Length: 68
Image (cartoon, rainbow, N blue to C red):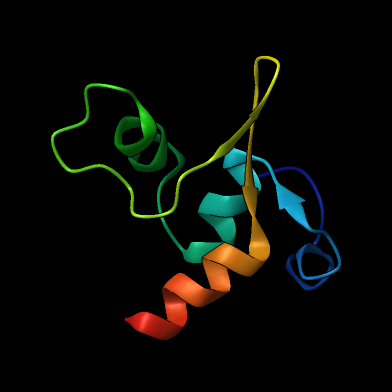
């Protein structure tokens, strides 16, 4: 997967779907399937939509991880 090294992801506040999947250790396709509007099992962290761009707040992702 191209992009930022894993260590540098923590320095960002908003992550792309690709970066979020890498951060959580999920398949990118799984994350896309769980954030679509008709998902049977929606992802518990709601993404931020900036225009057509989909981003995840890393602070919300960390809170989600802490609750697991």
